[in-house]
Length: 313
Image 1 (tube, rainbow, N blue to C red):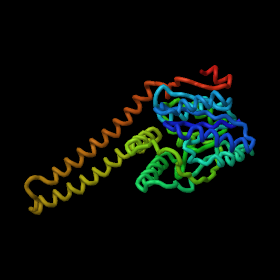
Image 2 (spheres, one colour):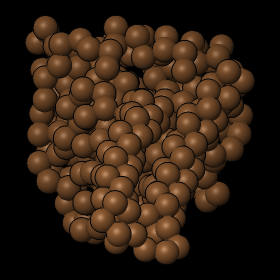
Image 3 (cartoon, rainbow, N blue to C red):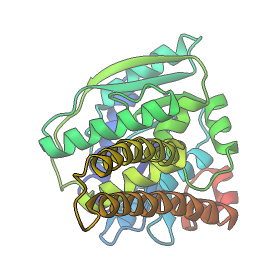
Image 4 (cartoon, helix red, strand yellow):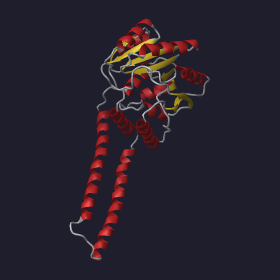
């Protein structure tokens, strides 16, 4: 059985359409499946529609968070409540093509492949600034972690063994897109075109994207900490050059009053120190979040006709 995991935040216009599309595509291809919807603290009718669907269709499970915990938490809630022999992550806005799930499933079904990873042929219609920011983000993640993150997405089909491995990972600050690559296993790629969103708009705002990028870079790689060392080396080299220049001017009588070199050095080293302390402080805050051992999410309601899910509820 295939579990389709769908996090949603304020997607009242897409939930029913997504369930119908998946039911039709997977049904036509005789794929036994379940759909696990996760309502991530939506303020619209998203949960009401999910609940209605779950009450009518035994293949649908609906989870309702007590508040908004973020997409990463919703993904892991879906993984932990999935019952299938394999599971696939799917976006509620239907920008991932449902037909590609069939291709992924057939590859997994043939054996020998544990992860079928969806890679984007193109990013669709996208703001050039956002596109450039995304490319820089994945390049930083890739260089810091050693993983190939270019054109990566959350659209992945995983064998039960991979799902179980991810669920056993204890950290609270998660980045599914990188963690699913870090665990290893035999992986094959399929390419897909990102469809345009037909209903609603993206819930991501510029400040949220920056916060998302910083959180995920610091939670999955220590590369920013290495910047502190790099800045130290650069400052040392600049100090040597300016020191030699100052001695040269003094011995040859060209030294100027006011010690401009000293002022420049002071400003440079102070800014480097403050930046470095900020990076270190951010990592300390991440350690603080982890050691509190709070749950990734809190589920308020579970609606399902499956007996195993009723027990969880």
